[in-house]
Length: 428
Length: 211
Ligand SMILES: Cc1cc2nc3c(=O)[nH]c(=O)nc-3n(C[C@H](O)[C@H](O)[C@H](O)COP(=O)(O)OP(=O)(O)OC[C@H]3O[C@@H](n4cnc5c(N)ncnc54)[C@H](O)[C@@H]3O)c2cc1C
Ligand code: SF4
Ligand code: SF4
Image: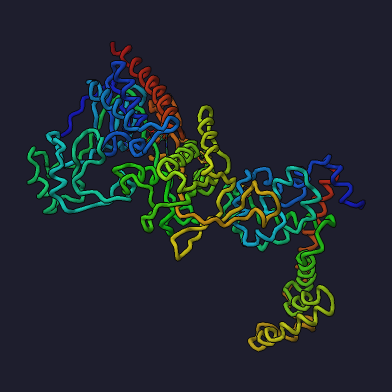
């Protein structure tokens, strides 16, 4: 049984992405007791799946590492992984939270040597790489994973493969009898930082994500650049592994659209500008990028970045929401169809049918959790409401980049601290 | 009534968007367009339009009254609804196109080419006689729309198809004598009359209000 000590003065942080980590650290470094729960086997969230960060183009792992060190150094944070909140009830200062804990089948004795992974044969789609790569049935989610502890896929249980892993583990860390648990915690305030998921690109029917191999999403493109990603860091098109020469980026794929997500996801314009620099950096003059957009929303200081990308002769901007994509059967190339709004002339002059060998859909960010008891706005983002004692942090509350998500999470931590301070004042 | 084409613009003080909002079916949606261009790129006839829908909407807002109303564009619409299902703002684009066409025709601005406006009139005249389309007469009317010479030529060209349709009972030669119709013709005519009254009342109201 997992023992977690929590009281009315404890702050529960749900979600261990950059926002949850930030909120947990801010509160813990103020001396508050924090329970941080994360659905995945390790911390980091979506940011750990990015290659580089705009606007500085540094590696997200760098910032993540600093934060993980802060977590390790702090005794006020109690971390639970593979944990999901099922229900929150009560009033601020006196909340009751039900949490489901899925077994990892690997104990804290794990030294992350990887012998178990070597011993197993079974492979599964790798979630960390959006299914574009395979991983073993016993695995470390990614190199920088925290906790640095292997995971046994639940689908392995009952197989000889799992037993082989157990036999291979010199640290005796594999426990195949671990069971799922449901625990209830009493806490004073909840910080909700469950973040986002990429909008399901297959729902944008005219773009054929589910039909054309060389139409991929922006989050998959980020993975492609990672040296440990599906293509070992090489920009390749999926159909034949060829180096693309003519990459298209389609903006607002699923955002700002009443048929899909109504909101502007805010980061995807910047993400695309950033990704054109990946193409430039790796392929130089051998490849061109074309950005199809409604309008480029690069806010404040990020506008300088936009201007710099516009100066690159290899990057073309086409003001047009792409109408549809069709396939050129013989080559695996695709054609983008639409109207170029800035072309002078009449209808026929504006119409284009452009050939590309790789298409990246700048998919929108959709709130990752919806539950009837969660107070959300019509777009599914958490609606901040002090009377619930649940405070949104980061992308669970609105579409934000990392910089703003961190600010937002700090604000949420402050609100939660106010609640538990009030409780402390009463309880003395 | 005075020439609506002269009185109307004055009424809206040259604000064509307001004129469209007041007079065109679903016209109040025009201002919701965000100029993404997906409608223009989705239209199967797009390359043949003077101005695709996105451009029409921009021109309405820019006050290009003459260019829009006398344009052939909205007469090209085949009601495929491709634009409408893709529009991220859910504008009823197809309906606006028909609304614009209707309005242009009402105030005498519809272009002479293509033949769509004239054919639409013939379709209406044909339909309103018996409540059912008389395909034989409508077909012939279309062949002869540009005069007797071209009509005979087209009729000759279409001869085999016509005979085929007769043989498979898809068309009856007796339609020429009057043709089939609905049962309650009087009710049908009353309905049309009522619709016309409503339409005229709406126009009159707009003219008085001048909004
Ligand atoms: C293509 C792309 C590129 C981007 N590039 C940049 C960039 O270069 N620079 C930048 O600043 N921003 C970038 N962003 C935005 C950035 O990804 C977000 O700002 C960031 O991920 C927000 O972090 P978060 O912690 O709020 O959410 P997330 O990263 O989504 O973290 C949420 C965490 O909560 C966990 N969780 C979810 N549900 C539950 C649950 N029920 N219970 C417990 N835990 C749960 C998740 O597993 C996850 O670990 C990019 C976005 C996209 C789409
Ligand atoms: S940030 Fe850009 S691509 Fe993303 S939804 Fe907004 S406008 Fe579209
Ligand atoms: S698709 Fe809709 S929003 Fe886009 S240009 Fe056409 S009418 Fe405007």
